[in-house]
Length: 237
Image (tube, rainbow, N blue to C red; front, side):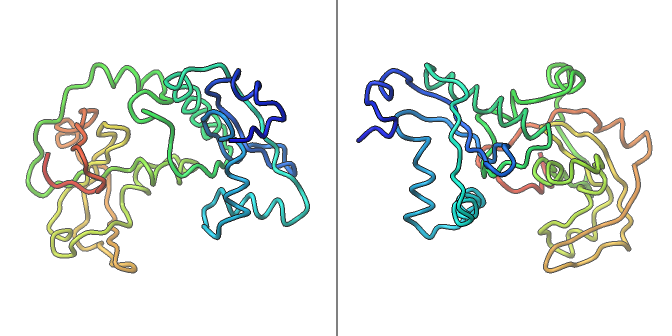
């Protein structure tokens, strides 16, 4: 394809690269991507030539409708494809941690396994015992996505309690909710059985941190992800 760098030799020489789309009004990136050839320019074409609605494309249209031009920044080039995945995910993690509101719909490559962690989280990852069973009346709730959205509150409880798509009768029989974050049980809550609310088809509970006796059974245990499962709710290992 025709190079948009102004010189086809540039496209050939830079190899795989990682780039940022920058809002000229704030000078802050709103999207991080990887690719080669003309990939960095493809998003502008998508915004102009399609009616597809995504946060990224809507941001591009907002910028251009106001008479501005999206800025394209090459963050690192001359990479192999595997290297570009690593750089892309590292930049995404770092910017999100710094409070930059990116429009990326998907987190970086292998972020859950090797992405940004505190020293304590790294230690826990490689020393934690596996969780091999849970008692009846317990539910494991994966809060990765909801906690990221509510990270300013830093409250595992607020994002664990709901709201979730759950069978109402099954939910009301539960005694404990195990909060799973990045593959580990980070807290255990005793559910008040009378507290369940049904909100727009989703369930929400109230409760408190479980007793030390119960927490000792689950806290900091490693949870193995079930292949192919995207459901954040698990009743069995």
